[in-house]
Image (cartoon, rainbow over all chains, first blue to last red; front, side, top):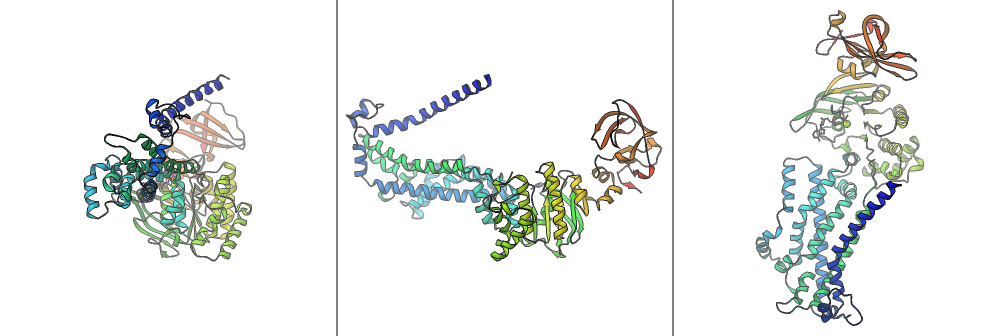
Length: 279
Length: 330
Ligand SMILES: Nc1ncnc2c1ncn2[C@@H]1O[C@H](COP(=O)(O)OP(=O)(O)OP(=O)(O)O)[C@@H](O)[C@H]1O
Ligand SMILES: [Mg+2]
C-alpha cells in the first residue's frame, strides 16, 4: 500500500513540475495570441487580460492581411523551410549512413569535420556567404536561403543520425546484401524506416530555427518577392512607432504552419518506434 | 555442387590480424561446424565466405571457382543470422521471396518455391504475417525458410539457435538436421554449443585465435585430439589434465575424460569438494594436491559426502599424453 501511495505522490510531483514548465514555456505565446485579438489601447492598459467584448478587435489581422503580401510571405517561408528540411534530412541521412556503415580511410576525421558545424555558428561566415551569393547571382532568391539553411542544418543531422544508424542491426543489412538488394535499397528501405524517430527529432530541431530566422532573409533575400514571414512582419516595427496589433497578429499567424509541421513529425516520433524483426 | 575451399585465407582489421591463414576443404553435401571460444574469428570467417567481409589475402573458392571478388548475392549462398534479420516491413511470404524477386525470377516460380519451403517448415498459416507478429522460434524458421527458397549452393548459419530457449533449440536443431538430409546441401554452421556441434556435424573445425587447431569428424576429435586445447574444448564436462610427472610417467600432462576416472584404485587421491546429482549421472568434483581440480562422471545415482577422501584409478589406454607445449604425444 505504502508503495502505491508513494508512487502516486511521485507521479503527482512529476506532473506538477511538468505543468509548471509547460505554463512557463507557453506563457509568452499565450500573451502574444491574446493581445493579437485586442485593440491598441487594451494592449497597453492591461496586457495580461483576455480579450473581452470591449477590448476585442481584429484590427491587427486586418492590417496584416491588407498590407504587404502576407500570403506570399507565408508561401516563401514554407518553401524555404520544407525544401531545406528535405535536403538536410536526405543528405544528412546519406552522409550518416556512409560514416556509420563503411570503413574507409579518414572515416573518423570526416565525421569530426562534418560535426564541427555544430560548434561554429554559420553566421560568422555571413560576409563570405553574401559575396558568394552575389558572385553566383543568387541574391534575392529563395535558393540562396535553402542552400544556407541546408548547410546550417547538416552538422547536427549527420551527428545524430550516424549515432542512430550505428544502432541498426548489421545482420539486417547483410541479409539484404545476400538477397541482392543494392546499397540504395538497403539505405532507403531497411535503414531509413528504422531510424524514423531520429529523423523526426532532427526535423524538429532543424525546422524551428529556419522558420524563425531573420538574419539571412534580411541579408540574402530582402526583396518583396522573396520575403519570409519573419522579415515581412518587420515592416510593422518602425524606429519610432510600432504597430503592435499588426506585429502580434503576424506572429500569431506565423505560429500556425510550424505547429502543423511539428504535429506531423511528433506523430511520426511516437509511431515510429518500430517493432522490428530484431528480437 | 557446393564444395568450398579456403586457401591460406587471412583477415586483418587495421593492424590486428584476426584470421591467420586458414586452409579448409568442405566437400559437397557436407555439414561443417565451426567451433571455438568467443572472439576466435568464427563469425568473421563465415562472413568472408559469404562475401560480407573482404579477404585480406588467400582465396575462397566455391565449386572450384574463385569468388573473392564476387558480391554476396552472386555467390549462390544463403545465410541465417542469430538475430534472424527478417525485413520488418515485409510479410513472411515477401521475406522469403525477396531474393528470387531481386534475381528476376517469374512470379509463379517464386510462389511455388516459397510455398514449398513454407510447407517444409510448417509456416503455411503464417505467410501473411509480419515478423513483429511472430514468436522467436517462428522468426528463426522463417529465416531458415528464406535461405531454403534460394536453393543456394552453400548454407551459412551463424549461431542460429542461441536466441531460442532450450526446448525450441532441440526442436530446431533436429529440423536443421532433417533439412540437411532432405536437401543434401552443403552447410556451414557456427556455434559454441558442444551438443549442436557433436550432433549435427559431419566435420568439426576447431578454431582458436584465428588458427585452425584441428579438423575432423566429431568422434575423431573426441577420441583422438591433437592437443590440449581441442581435448579440453570438445567434451563436456571438460577433460581432466593431470600432472604426468607426479604419476611417474615421462610425458608432461595426462588427459583423462571425467567418465574414464573410476573410484577405487590408489594412484590418484582427492577430497570431494562438490557433488552434482543429475539423476542419470552423478558428477563428483574433487580437489587433489597433485593435480588440482578433477571431475569424475559416474553413471547413476551415487552418494559422496563433501570432504570425503576418494582414491581414483584409470585405464592407461584411455589416457592421452601431452608434452609441455600441449601437443599430443602418440
Ligand atoms: N569490424 C571489426 N573491426 C575490428 N575488429 C573486429 C571487427 N569484427 C570483428 N573483430 C574482431 O575479430 C575477432 C573475431 O571476431 P568474431 O566476431 O569473428 O568472433 P566469433 O568467433 O564469432 O566470436 P563469438 O563466438 O563471440 O561470436 C574479435 O577479436 C573481434 O574483436
Ligand atoms: Mg560470432
